[in-house]
Amino acid sequence: MLSLASVSPSASLSLQKNFKTNWKRGTSSRINFLGSDFSKTKSYTRTSMTVAVKVSRFNDITMAPPDPILGVSEAFKADTNEMKLNLGVGAYRTEDLQPYVLNVVKKAENLMLERGENKEYLPIEGLAAFNKVTAELLLGADNAVIQQQRVATVQGLSGTGSLRLAAALIERYFPGAKVLISSPTWGNHKNIFNDARVPWSEYRYYDPKTVGLDFDGMISDIKAAPDGSFVLLHGCAHNPTGIDPTPEQWEKIADVIQEKNQIPFFDVAYQGFASGSLDEDASSVRLFAARGMELFVAQSYSKNLGLYAERIGAINVVCASSDAAARVKSQLKRLARPMYSNPSIHGARIVANVVGSPELFNQWKEEMEMMAGRIKSVRQKLYDSLCAKDKSGKDWSFILKQIGMFSFTGLSKTQTENMTSKWHVYMTKDGRISLAGLSSAKCEYLADAIVDSYHNVK
Image (cartoon, rainbow, N blue to C red; front, side):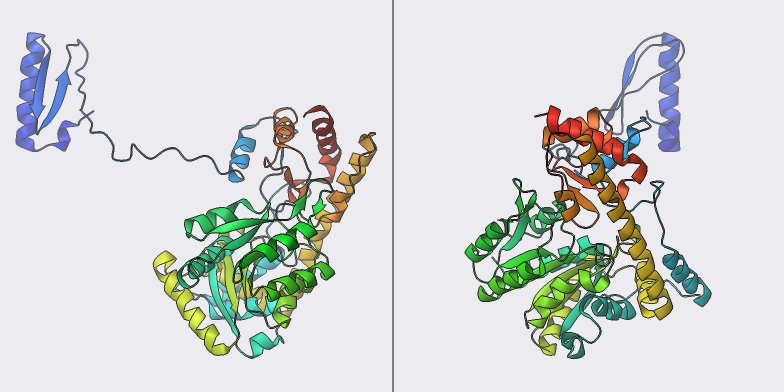
């Protein structure tokens, strides 16, 4: 509808006069005004006008499919069943299945308020105090690569943004180089490299027969990849499978990558959150660095500090020399500038305050152990419930062998659909469940759903 107040005064008066004349005549008329056609139809109560609208220039843009992970939460919210479970998104929940803000995070935020810190722009590379402590947390403060200033660290927009920044560096300075990605992997990995125009291929990782690691297939595929390729590795708590290589297998993986002159690219999203130990969960990265290998590491603090919405993380590039690290950092900054200009400050200060304070750091480690312990507890209870309810003799021990917040159930797409439609259990279609969204009280219910779906749906 067109408001007469939206046109010029003289045009408005003319248009109103025309309307009144035609209204008295009781006829329909067509008025051309400022190049647009307005239709007036006879009515005893109102005058209606229609405006000819041009075809949108966006008509060729198709509707994008919903995100396979975030879309699960939307469906969950719409479900009114009281037994519903959201095991799709990897976000920690309390035993009451409520979001959890770490106490140490609250203390760090109070420190910021007490100091009256401002909200000025950060440099492109981020908060200096954050970059320092995050590299030390990852590699160890006494690591030679830090002492020799061979690490280029740039604050990124959590793990996703840090991966994307690294992908842009690969596309610009390693043209044509391929990234090897595990099969399966976190769904967004492929999106990131596709959008950065970096070619990728998969290496075998998950063995559906054993619901474990296909180590021979993994090694074979890495060996077959071109020299100089990037190999994307999950530092700990592999997403979505929860299956990690053993320390001996990590050594063999490093051997092959080193022989092939390939570059390891670690995604570390769960340091301290998987085992409860920051050092243990970073051992794979430190192993490769100790061999003198150059490598990429993307970090995220979404899980281990519960800073999901703060989007706080970093990209670290371990180089052969301090000179190379300085040049790499300069180019990461150059790429970040037109991409997002500079990162946010709030989450960076939280991390810097927590990791930089011995008192808060120790409290953080205690809270991480608590969170990791709760996940281990529901993992054990789910296993016990499955064994008690399933009389078929199926071996469910793979659930205990997996680590971190996820469990790969081995359920097919049709079986996961049954989990949702019949049991109101929301999960990704690849069979992954987030144990962080499960309570002890719901373990038996979930076991019933899994047993039913596994045995009665093909």
